[in-house]
Image 1 (cartoon, rainbow, N blue to C red):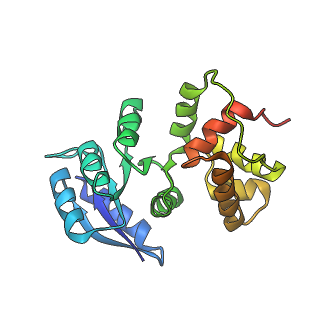
Image 2: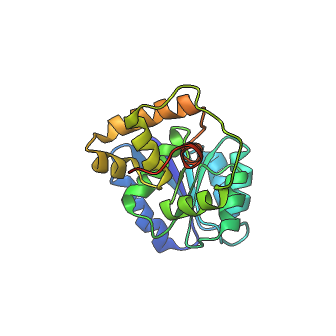
Image 3: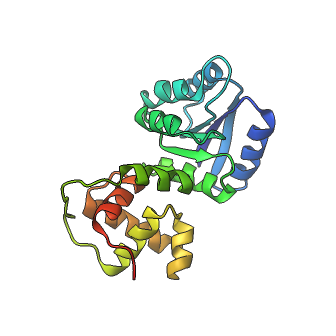
Length: 210
């Protein structure tokens, strides 16, 4: 069972997230916080597997929450309405395991929680594409430790496009579990820590399809 703590100053948002997450058989919400200081206190008391935190909250903001809890080994996913590069960069630098916009689909919210538990990082697709546009500049070639197969290359392109595992599976007519296994293999071959690493390598080294 994955234990989750919700931190958001809007009760209706916390309620909506609780409904989405607790509809999953393997996820439960163990606590809710209305401000950053309460989020840290409750996280230290309940030791959840994942904390979902807003950025703009009373007392302490979500970036301060991320800094405090990630430094203690707690997995933090930022969920916010503010689509600002400054927030994304700071959250990831402070140790966030994901960055989602509140308009993201319920499926993406659930996948972000599971990705954080798996040690991965999931970022809203529109943010991923923008980040990669900023990163897309000439860099020394860094070949893969092992070459990717054609199927792995297709999946890597999907990751670079900001697609979720489910979207990649649907596009390639694969089972989601198969895509997950391929992504684990791709990370090993590329020595990539997460999906952003896969996407960056793909942008640098893989020509567009067709």
